[in-house]
Image (cartoon, rainbow, N blue to C red; front, side, top):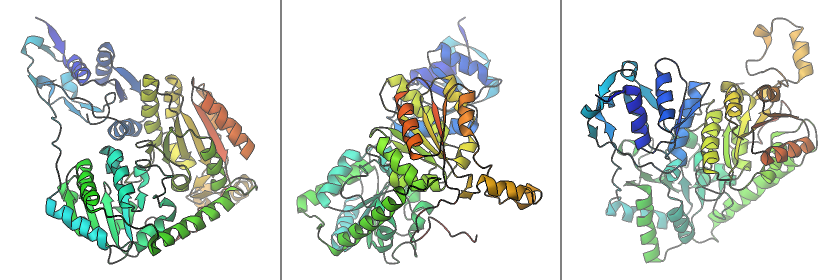
Length: 503
């Protein structure tokens, strides 16, 4: 009798689904599964933090092509619960421990079809007609491109629709790059004004959650009309009742909208008061950011750091970013030119995912010899959540370029002199601000401790030199510990992302 274990069946099933990589943390009984996966030809990446493992799964879902899903032996249907949407090459698996070492007769294993691809669905024709009518009557229209457009691989038809309709667009954080950030219709640099004054918003794969202020005043026009393109019926109409509800596949629906625009020959004029308002705000914000970026004082500020990083990054690099000010300012200053090339803390602002994203991206880019660099830009607080994953990067020689923008705290910190004086005043647990971290912590030495490159950066010259050297090194990871002014902050905002602090 040809006997196989549950671990072998799991591995064989994943291999049949063209899985190339497994990310995880082993312990009994998962060790046997990881070993079986390796024996089946699957590459195993051992992580240090379960949160980072989950980030790898999310990366596989967001960043790449769906794999072809094949049969799973029914004997392990209950043992394997796996998120197999994503590119061929990555998965996340939960395993029932008592199934791993159980032996079964291979001849009695029954194969069943699993996870058929969902059908492509069109929006209701009447709703499409309604949506076009609402767009045509708008004085201040706006398209919001969300990460659903990235998941749906809608970049080609979206580009044609935007350019044919002439409408301005605003990407959400992980919608960046679906259309290039330097596209003439992109109004990301006038985000606040665009959201506040738009009278019609076409939501393409975006949801009115906290990142978009729930679509409500005072961040939005109280009379704004929402045209919602949504894949999930339960999400339709959340927070704001749509003027037109377009339920279905984003590629199919944008194709429907494009057909109507092409047929009518309609185009929103570029010489309107709305476009003038947006361009005026874009120019004013660009001027303000440039003035901050070109300051020569030390320590550097956020804008100086991002200005020089943006000049050196390859256009096709994958940017991972998380933090508070680091992520928010980086979103505006580090452009994306290609779809699915930016990942951040996401809808729930979950810190700690950045290094997991970077590891998954680097492993897959390395296996494909794509030539794309993975650059992970972290705040010092965000880095602390999964900082031990630098050992994972070094263990597998993953050439991630990790930039820690270090302001000694969460939002803001203290300089070393002030910290020492405060320590003389009493117990730091009673008097140190809760947002403070150890000043000028040597995160670069964490990387060098495991064999990677570490750089302590204080000046523009050191920043540019370290980044250029790191980008040229394809053999091992690098960490740039960039010390900035602890009081450095964002430029004045018209309104905050969610709520104002009482501090």
